Length: 377
Image (cartoon, rainbow, N blue to C red; front, side):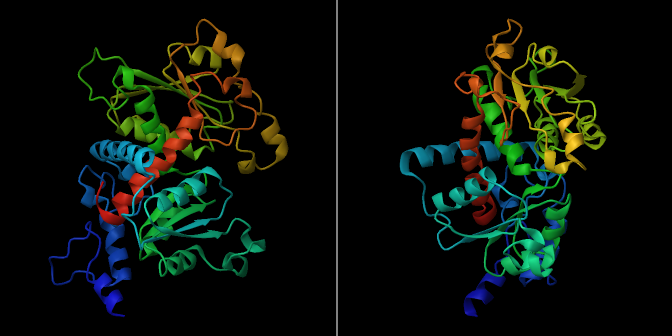
């Protein structure tokens, strides 16, 4: 009880407690968090703005906060490669609760926590009412998240409904990290994607180089595949626009699966980003720096017939890469899993960056956990 009292007297750094009406309990702090830490641009290059904050959308991340995160991820990469990790999160506990299947996001968050000395409590809620968690008994998302917050210092949540992460964060006594909310967003994936682009394109200054003027070369990013349902590309397009980089976004998708208007309208607010639509993959990759591929998300369709009608329209294979018009310096990325949209004969091509991208996911999530749980890089 004494330790709980001590914890309640030390809320996260993003909560300013100078007034006499300052929050003192976890739930009071959570109510304050929803106003202070979920606002657009609330996460900056000041590590204290991340401390105790939930991460539900890329909208929260200021340009300077993105640079802080990428710098911290590079430090985590060096830490792992030199020492395997450290114990900065010793005696901290991370809970991961997944209402949808996951391999990379779930494993990389657990590995990230372990590398920094934290314990992990995993809940597989993907079976729904037929699963092994209390969701099968009718427990609500809010109750599940709030209960897990009684045991853990932060909760990583994947859920099939758009907006679910924000719902959970507003009722939670601990930070909630969005690991994908239906067709909405996947902010930690977007962060690792931008970090990978910046790292892979470092010979040309990296995608996060500060704009110097209208003559600076633009970075051309092709987003290919199921752009309607792909939460990874929704977050990525928004984050690239917010980054300040001079970026040309090319959308290439089957006709029924375009980038949502809400995402396009958001990107249009940023003059550094342009948007265009291509029907031809061969035309889209001309002059491209990045080809970002996504699978057709069969599980989001009303019927198998609808999914089959658009599957196989675009395939990245050796024939595409061997075309003279396809840049030799273009990198190929994919959030994975892949189905048949990237042929395995591409894997050994040096332009294939998707497995390096996956490794970067652990480093970026280590940086996120350190910032949110300690307020330090």
